[in-house]
Length: 461
Image (cartoon, rainbow, N blue to C red; front, top):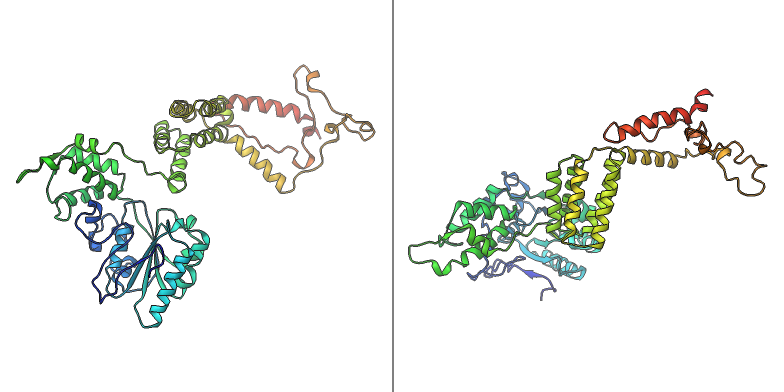
């Protein structure tokens, strides 16, 4: 009996019953996306870079080389399709599991069975693990030995960057194949095939150019999503179809069938970090429109607004600083609004902060200053505090010379006096180097005068 969470492709001598994650046996009433799954590699759309003659993908599908493979790509790009194609091989056993409902016990059971079959002269076992990034480190480690000695040929699928989500020893034992997100043209091909194919809608509907473009756009590179929406829309026209008459699938029909496009954005995965990175880089690049787009993607996807607000507050000092000191006030006010008001209304406050920060003059002088100072401290450039600056409020401090030479700046008409403040080891070191951008240009002029006065004694020494 199979271990929990596992199922097996029948041996070649038996009627083949292909079951891979997400699909069952063919019964004619599967979802459109399942019925239209490519039956050969040449039907795979959008992955031409993996289909060259002799490529690792062709070798594993055609069974010419028992190499373990990690398939990395976004949803709907063809990872499960490739698993189906591999499962069709007559000279290999195929077992599959999902990391969502399988554990170490299941992995070990599959490996033990593969070893037993191999020792009795049976065929090579391919173990397909969907969403392998959801396995713990221990679960992933349990695969290492079997992959190393080829007890199993691993075929793992993930939507997350394997270099972050899969243990390094497992990555090093596998060939990494990166599936690209489907382009609009690729998704359009899939839609056209599905409408015309006997396996699909078999011409039951005709689609307008506008509706086709809408489906492509809302799919966001996910073929499965496009076909799910197409099937839902076509189902609403089923009563209108007559012999020799295919009703038109219009934008209105599509919009009525699918309420809104789900945004591909995993708050624990690459989508989260990629969109957040693009958001900050758009702000830094002063592209307010791109920044607003990424803000909208995070809002629609349900990102924690406190995360967005924190990034804005950090950005205000890291990338703007004294070029526009009010940027920090705006970002902090937006963060406060998020806490006090909440969503969806706080989206307006976040948007205002985005506009301010994107259009503000930029300077990284503040973060450069603190990071260089921290670097010097960590490198041991510390030095004793000058005696004039040491605490002189306790009895006996005067005898130690603490504070005796300190000059009170407020006693001077200028409010600033020549005086050694820094330890000798960093005397004359300029950490803060203001730009000439925005308000910081004025700060630069004032700072030059201040340093000239404060360091007068040092210059004369």
